[in-house]
Image 1 (tube, rainbow, N blue to C red):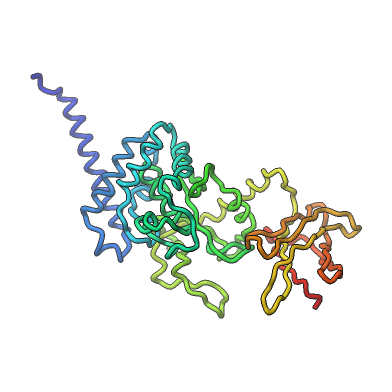
Image 2: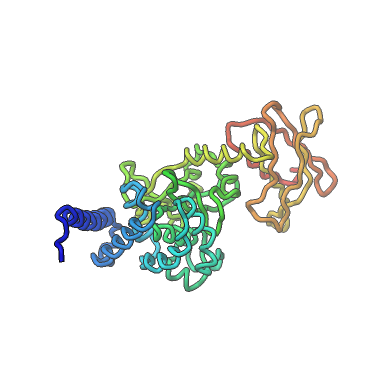
Length: 379
């Protein structure tokens, strides 16, 4: 038997050393930024398994090998997303999703394939009956029910299992309705792209529309993305399920124990993205966006009224019209109309149930959107 060429042996040795260094480097990275509560329960053997599996898919899929190492270690290697239970999911998810993306050529194609197939693959659906928002993978698979946060955790883990960097993004509260929302960002073609569970494309329309209504001057309207590595700015991802409501301030308060997930502020990028998205819609009209909701008091409770509303110029020319949502409509739904840029002042006009005509003057403001919760009361 002929001995192996010296150059070949050197190449194999270098490759083995490189692989060893990557495993060691990956483990050191995970350990360096590991949450304190994980240190007693996450073993060296667990870290080694996580890193080896992540490096295996990095060499297996073309898109994974093209990801910069600092992105890969921060958004593929981590075994957790927020403060969910630390279940082991990587090998199980790799076995489920790797066959689905075997013919994909790019990370973009692979990410969209996983997002579109994940619900029928895992048999897990959104439900308000889920136990907690931040369920671990195991509980979500067993119950089949998750929140938007739970959906995001599953999708992030699925993407990471095939070497696509993924992280959670979210807003504390919308500007037009109460409630938060979390979604996924996937690193594709050298940039972060907004993606959601069981969607076939990036930039979910209703989320883009809601983001375009945010007021970036309000802290509660800021958008953050998770990070494993702590940032110099000291930002944290808002774990809304761990927050407390401060009645005096009329705002959520995040106690120290909830500030455990490092984050980056991505508000500017999303405001620009949502603005471009809105401008690309066929119905887009430059001007001030108005969102209307009309309610009446019914036995001490507010009831939404489906009333026909017209937006007119001061001369009486109709600029836009529509019907406000009724009591059975989703709380996110409003009548959306626009006061055009060229019209400095408008008049909203609608007929109350008692036959009285109500008029409200409207002008442009600096806010991205004007949320108008009107009362049917004459007082």
